[in-house]
Image 1 (tube, helix red, strand yellow):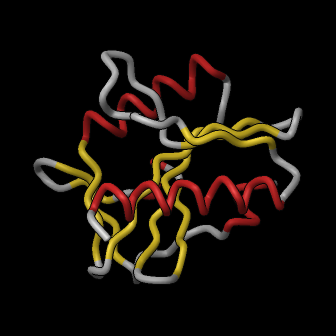
Image 2 (cartoon, helix red, strand yellow; image 1 turned 180 degrees about the vertical axis):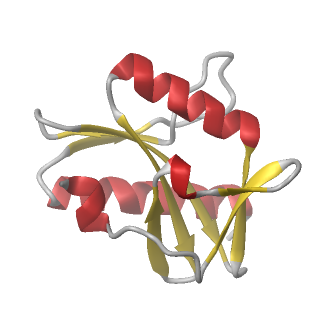
Image 3 (cartoon, one colour; image 1 turned 180 degrees about the horizontal axis):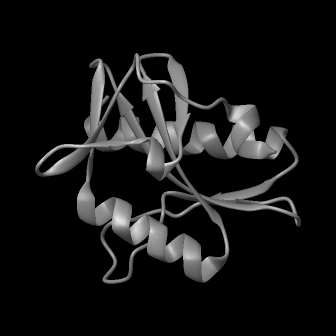
Length: 124
């Protein structure tokens, strides 16, 4: 499975998880290619809305571009949604708020040992 297919599969998995938690959820196909920023997944249960940037990796770390995180925060502010980052480390999902990220010179980095939130945390 190529990187794009793996990322799309991870996004669809989050959408399925959110529907199972009584959120209406959509995957924004082609996110990252439009001139307007759009998160990978948008979901709401009528009380809470979330904008989720998803990644999937077989490595023990995952980088997020500084501009990508800035745009997620801006989109979430305008949309009145909570911004979240979801990383699938091999088979385990971990969830992060943007303020949980550690910034390097060029990016934000998360490791699979980094303290994370749970899917339930994101849904409450």
